[in-house]
Structure formats: structure tokens, C-alpha cells
Image (cartoon, rainbow, N blue to C red):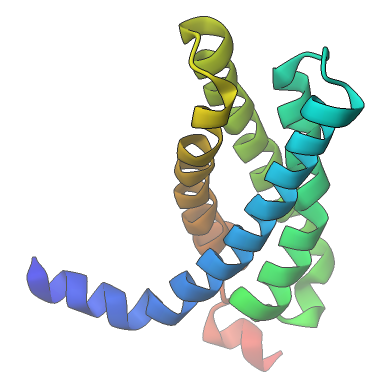
Length: 145
């Protein structure tokens, strides 16, 4: 078990660090937009809707940063990756919106306490779905063509 963990850390360590940096910057964009929308622009608006809009605001930065830096995806598969990325973003946004709604509207937790844990759960989900689905390296035979 420990050997497997070491192997995973060696194999994925650099990618995880890059993912965390991009994710951290994306979170700052998300949290900044959420604060701007809910505290200044639309203080009486539905918090779940504002959270959803804030997630959408950070999605573009997230795609290009992950594609070009975290996963170093090839240009030839750009269109395919955009569609896969959108599928992951939509599913992650639905997950994040549901968890936010569950915690804030259903359970009644203060919205400021919910942002980080929900973003963390979604970060784990998106790391592995992007790694295994969106930006997955093609088999060697596809690389040659």
C-alpha cells in the first residue's frame, strides 16, 4: 500500500502541484466574483444562482491554464478536449451547485463557510476526470499519427 502511494506521488506529484496552483487561482476568481456579486452588485440575489454564475466566470481561465500548463495537452485534439472539458465543467458545476444548495439552503450553513469545502470536493473530482478523460494522453499509436 505504501509503495503504491509512493508510485502515485512520483507519477502524479508535479501534475497535482500544477493542478493546485491553477485551481487556487481559479478559486480566487470564483470567490472574488462571488463576493462581488453577493456583497456589492446583487446583495439580495439568490446565493445559489450567484455561486453558479461565479463558477462559470472562472471556467475559461481554468480550461486554458489546465490545457496548456497542467496537462500539457496537444493542439491537434483541441476541439475534442473543449467538448470533454465542457462535459466535466457542467457535471462539476452541477455537483458544486448541488452541494452549495444542500449546505446553504437546505442545512442552513453560512455561505462563507461552504465555499472552500465544496470547492475542495469538486477539485478532487475535476482533477481525476480531467486527468483520465479530458486531457488523457492518447495511446502511443495515436501520438505517431
